[in-house]
Image (cartoon, rainbow over all chains, first blue to last red; front, side, top):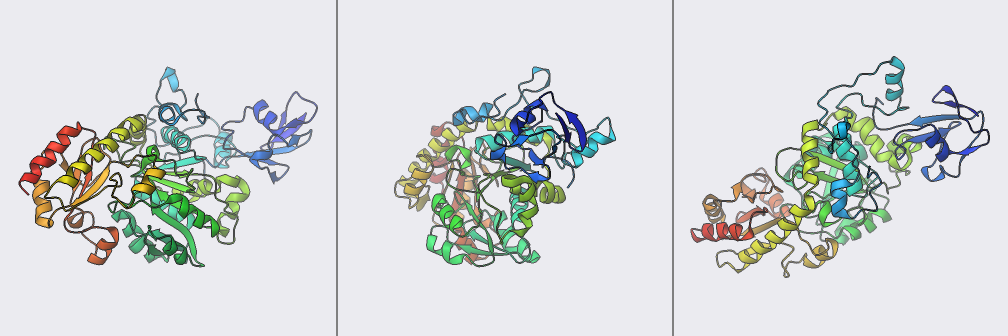
Length: 70
Length: 417
């Protein structure tokens, strides 16, 4: 399926919707215990990562509070 | 990698919890003595600045060595995240300034380390942040002290140098009832005596310079976020943007992305490395600090020239019950005792051969000081009384030497008092 990840086009092999946790693994997202995930503009609660599904055309942003500027 | 850590027992966590393999098979997180970190492309650095990717930018903001210790401390304290700073005082300043704003009030125990009292009473007061002090052994005084403006409750887990032991779980219950975070300075109790998150603390402070470092070779501080406090409240509108983005990491995000970044009290990588080395042996050292302190306290209590001894490990201490319950039958390495007067206290300090006369605690070496003429010298008699500091009082940070040598040092010195 085709996604937008951090503003850039991205593709994963799966065609059917997957859980957010599955996507974090598939995209090899770093420091998963700290990352904030925004799905189509909504911040997801950490406890909902397994129950939230990601489908073709979705837009995902990953946010870290660790480094960088404000 | 033992990142999860939760399945490990405490003493094992001190060694393995939150650790990651170093480069070249190194068993240590290396000292990354670099001010800044370079990237191949402008896009990579943009992503890191925007928080879209993980990466180091500048050591004031973050550094792999500092991050290594932060992850270990978070695991050891059962917190969700930690931030380390240049000193214990900068940890308190950074954490407090993340919570309170101009016009807010801090409700603090009156039994405080002198530096913290000065910060609250003098420095923060100049910036429109008022602190109300209460007796930490009086829960009714705590509840009565909460006002519409109270935004933080602050307490030391063992008062230094008053040696009082507040009931942290009872404090937490009152703080929760009023929707106010409880910040505890657990420097004297250390994570070895109790994990303060288990007792209901929301934010845990350590001066890592003391028992965590253990050998007095580096100054440092730590702020640990228990991750329990719900910052979505009319009392904390300044947390709204952080909670919206980072949810239960709101406090750490505000510390890291605003207060710590702006105040800039970053730890030095070498100091963080050395404190991490100390952390591995915390349990072994604390066990000995505690047993030696009890031996010395019992010796002093029986000595005819000693007027009184204040150590929660003594069965007649008013804090023996709460400390025993809270700290699992261990009482720490700090004690105070009284002689006849100030000249007697000075004679004792001058006659000690093993114990060092200096302003620190938590070293492997036994340390003494006369607080009234040194670390508390700037305060009025009234304030000294609040802090439990009198002219005849000597504070001892009991080291991990052979207990017979410590006792002998005090026995010989007391002969000339």
